[in-house]
Image 1 (cartoon, one colour):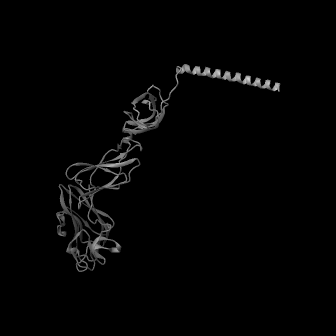
Image 2: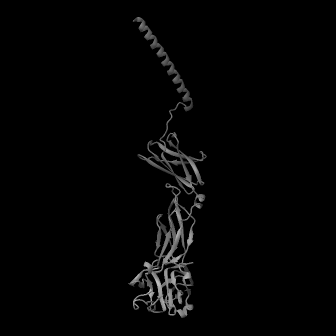
Length: 401
C-alpha cells in the first residue's frame, strides 16, 4: 500500500510540473501578443449587416443594417481595392438602423465594395464585402426600342391606336410623347404588358415619339432609356373595312353593307331592297353583279371621313372578278360623294378593275391633302353592256405615307 501511494504521488507531482510549465508558456505568448496591441483589449464594433449595393447611372446606393452596438458613429465605404473611400457619419437610434449612402460619381463598371464601421473609441469592425456595379452610356446605347407595329387613327371618334409587339426582357414599360389637339405636348407612360395604347386627344397631323424604359436589375435606382423614335400615323380606320364586310340588312344571299352608303343604282337585288353586299360561299363582300339581274348605272358604295394633311393610299383587295368588267372603279374624291363613271377623271384618284387577272391582289389609289378636308372613298360601277359579269372585294385599307 505504501508503494502504491508513493507511485501515485509521483504522478501527481509530474502532472503539476507540466501544468505549471504550460501556464508559463501560455502567459509568455500572451505577453508577446500584447507587444502588438500595446497591452490593450481588441474591441470589434458591430459589423455592417445585410449589405446591399443598388446600381444606378454612374453611381451606386450602398445600404446596410446596424443591428447591435449603440456606440457606432461612422462607417467607411471602400472600392477600387481601397483606392477610393467615402465616410458616412452615423447617429444610432433605438433598435435596428438602416444606413444608406450614395457613392457618386462612379465610372461605368463592376466594383467590389468593403464597409467598415467605427465606434466612439476608434475601434473598427470586421469588413463586410459585396459586389456591385454602376451603369452608364455604354449600357444605355445597347438598349433596343420596343417595336411599334403601327399607329392607326379612327376619324369617327378622334382616337389614335398604337399597336405594340411584345416587350423585351428587362423593360419596365415605354414612354409616349405626343401633341394633343390643343397643341400641348403630353407624355404618357405605357405598361410593359400593354399591347395597344389608346390616345383620345392626339393631333393626327403630328408625329408621335416613343422610347422604352429599362432597369439593369431589380435593385436599380435609376431608369435607363432606349433611343427615342418618331412615327407618324400609318393607317386610318375605316368603318367596316372588310375581311369580312358586315351587312346591315339582308335578303338571302344579298344585303346592304353596314356603315357604308349604297345608292339606289347599286341596289339591284330583291326589287331594289338590297345590293352591294354578297355572302357568296359564306363570306362577306362588297360586290357588284349583273348576271340575269337588273343593270347597274353609276352604282356607288362609299363612306365619308375627315383627314388631316398628308399623302395617303386607299388600298382595295380584289377577291374575285368573273368575266371582264365594263366600268368599275375604286375612287377617292373631295366632298361627300363620288363622281359618276363618265366623270371619274374628276376624282382625286381612281383605279379601274378589268378582269380575273386581278383576283386576289391589292390595288392602291394614292392621293394627297394639303389641309384637313372631308373626303369620300369607295366604289363606283356601271354594268349595262356585258351581262354575266361580277366583282367582289374582300377588304379595304387607308394608309398614310
